[in-house]
Length: 189
Image (tube, rainbow, N blue to C red; front, side):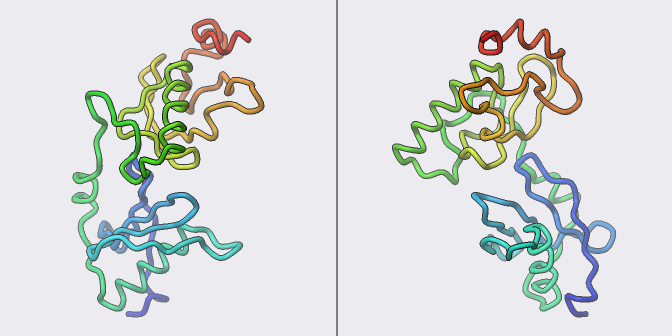
């Protein structure tokens, strides 16, 4: 079977935004995710950085095609989707570290993490999986105003040009924009 005849589909991402690339009914040939504009895949043979996709190509499509080629060539093996879901990261019960494990502990990253965590506190969010991943990487957060949790990006969340972020907090609703403005002093500016 060639990669061109192998049909793949993209499954729902885990809480770190790693998308399973699935063949058949529920066999995963790898997971794909974006990190600082590059697309990476995780397979039975480890992690591989595919770099940035060509202009006009979606990164997830590039990753799925790469995984299909690797599987068709016999270089990676498939595992059950159920196993991938069982091994997916889970939120932590306690405090998270300052930086995501992939982020080097440079002075700039540490300073950015302190700013981001101060912003989370001010706007009533809590990191529940890992530390600051950088402004343009997915960060699994919990809303402290309602039971919602999910992926946010600090670059989208922090507001622009000295303004607070939108009082619309997340999909699925929250407590309402008026209550958000009343509870969070930064929205009262």
